[in-house]
Amino acid sequence: MPRVSHFDIPADDPQRAQKFYKKVFDWKFEKWDGPMDYWMATTGTKEPGINGGLSKRIPGQMGMVNTIDVPSVDEFTKKIIKNGGQLIVPKMAIPKIGWFAQCMDTELNIFGIIEKDEKAE
Image 1 (cartoon, rainbow, N blue to C red):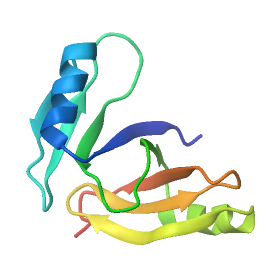
Image 2 (cartoon, one colour; image 1 turned 90 degrees about the vertical axis):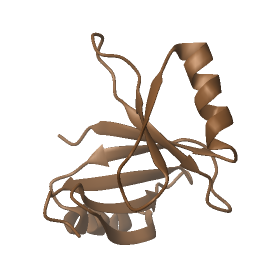
Image 3 (cartoon, rainbow, N blue to C red; image 1 turned 90 degrees about the horizontal axis):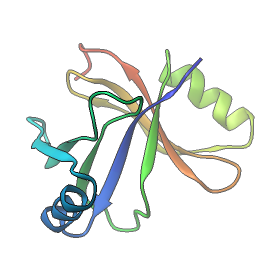
Image 4 (tube, rainbow, N blue to C red; image 1 turned 45 degrees about the vertical axis):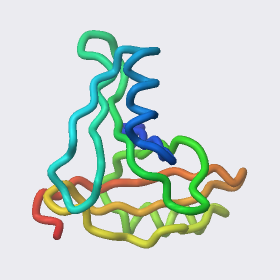
């Protein structure tokens, strides 16, 4: 069963946002060595939960986005559309991580889906 595995926080000022989450929740941030400015967020190590990331807000981007692990982005994109959802950002590679797409549900909530694949480029 696909599960939420990651969250993404868009920020107008990534440094200010990191400072906020560090001071309020004691989260730790580490710069990701990827093709964009992105900071991995570690929210804990013992209790159940997920980690996420933080990046500069893309114009029009609103609120946190949860990402759900799926075995196939192509298969789940079809299921999402068939059931009244929409594809917002088409399938794209996140190098050495996997294939990602962003979708919208029937209630206008945005979420991501990711297919893990270290060979993605």
